[in-house]
Length: 398
Ligand SMILES: Cc1cc2nc3c(=O)[nH]c(=O)nc-3n(C[C@H](O)[C@H](O)[C@H](O)COP(=O)(O)OP(=O)(O)OC[C@H]3O[C@@H](n4cnc5c(N)ncnc54)[C@H](O)[C@@H]3O)c2cc1C
Image 1 (cartoon, rainbow, N blue to C red):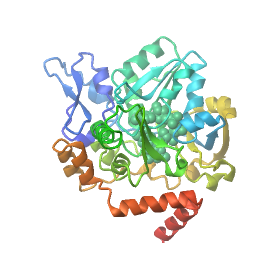
Image 2 (image 1 turned 90 degrees about the vertical axis):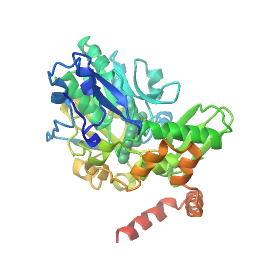
Image 3 (image 1 turned 30 degrees about the vertical axis):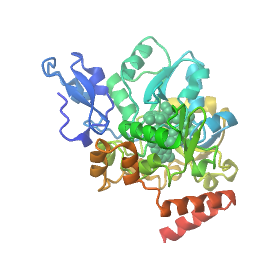
């Protein structure tokens, strides 16, 4: 029976609760806002299916022949709507064109991040764009299986742990399943996100209901300095990475799931068909791709993905790059995030302090933050941000 003694050994993928034939495992929220399996021992018959399919307990490393690409979606509106270069949409469209279904992370009506499935291209916008919060999977894995058993094409997109959880849950290969994972830094807590939404609503939007959230909005200052944008019907809040409290908690690694600090899925060879992630250094691979509107990197991990890429590559401006070059210095592929000392206090305070006191304590809008914001925006407006950033990185490396 699954027994989570150390929280760092559970990625919350839901494979165990979905597989349990006795329906004895429920995913229950802890006081950090993350879900963990809880077993009703009176229902459990010790079949141990849950431990056999847990992707953290059963780590895999299968070497594969990969291909690498740097690419931009040719459709400007799709690229604008996507977090990086719009790599995900053509894969999803390939499946929808074959009467398939596409699973991915979206918002529900309370702006919580959840996995949904869609069957029409007009609905793809719901899945586009990274939501930097652990998504609620519910019974998505069971639904995927049902569609596959009914001979439908299925595209499932998510984090590497979600993909491995799904594949273990399914227990066999399905020709019509196409999986896409994002190269994941770490997943932040849904509770921190809830607190953040109340904070922004109260302090920046005159208490008006939030209507939309974009985690990395490229429309304000471009791809390389994307902002968090939160809108109500009358007001709009946007702030960059050094100022916005949610982005500061994400990039400061304070709000991540405990398993992300010892992630079992940091490796070169992912179990997915495609792995997609940001490319902030497109000019290094192909100058023509670097227009600051968003560029993706893509690893094609399987022969199936290779054939699909051949069919969809007319949707992209792209350059092929060796997998070694493409993944050089990509820390989020191989390294877990560092555990900050402050994390314990941060989560102890989240349930004690109100939203204003909480975010002001951990992310004060200090003079240093204001000066940094002023410098960044001035550099962007004068068109020399990229040059100065590259120079600063070189100096820091020395
Ligand atoms: C939690 C998280 C951490 C990430 N960390 C990094 C990183 O460290 N470095 C990096 O280069 N890129 C990272 N990415 C990936 C990056 O943000 C882009 O998603 C990726 O480049 C694809 O962009 P796109 O333009 O091709 O696709 P888009 O059209 O923007 O597609 C977004 C895709 O991400 C999926 N997705 C969105 N939110 C979630 C979520 N909460 N959980 C699971 N799946 C989700 C959607 O289902 C969809 O398939 C991360 C993404 C997420 C969700």
